[in-house]
Amino acid sequence: MHTNCPHCGKRYDHQLNDAWLIVCPSCHQEITSVGIKDDKAFHMPDDWSVIQIGTTGTYKGQSFIVCGRIRFQMKYDFRNLWCARYGDKTIWIGQSLESVGYFTPPFAPYPYQFENIRAGLLIEFSDKIKLKCEMIESCLSVHYEGEIAEYPFPDARVAIIQASNTARNTVLIFTNPGGRQHFLWGELMLVYGVSFEKVRTFAEWESVK
Image (cartoon, rainbow, N blue to C red):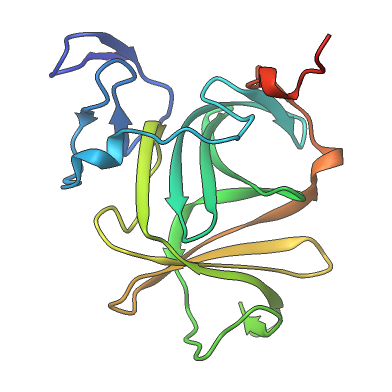
């Protein structure tokens, strides 16, 4: 399936079966509109991530190809959540310096309330599963590129909580000022156990000859 961008006319070949937002790679405008009001949200800031749209890899024996991302800007850091075609399904890939998380969509309402959460405390995920909070950060801005599955807070400020346990279960919880909470559930893997292909390389890291 393909679509011509309504703004620049360029052809776009669809990647996902559950696409929610498509941002034109040529003119950085919405091909499919979801009502995001901030035009700056479609101009992706540059960063040092080696994963890019088109990056490929394998997870649990199934290959994937990255087709979009959501970038969350915090006060001193940022977090990329990459959306990938995974066979006939979709997965989200979150990467930090030490680990890679593979998260299964869709976003779902988080069933528990919590107060005064901070890094190091346990949070309840179910009656039997508790996870240690590793990060809680407020987002100053959110940017989108490529083709992504549904994200429940397209026009709202959010805070992100990440928690995991020794069984490598991990959760990303997104909460807005109105008290709505949605989560992605996944598996955490150490970066040395994961490999990607078609990644971005940086000339600054090459030794001077």
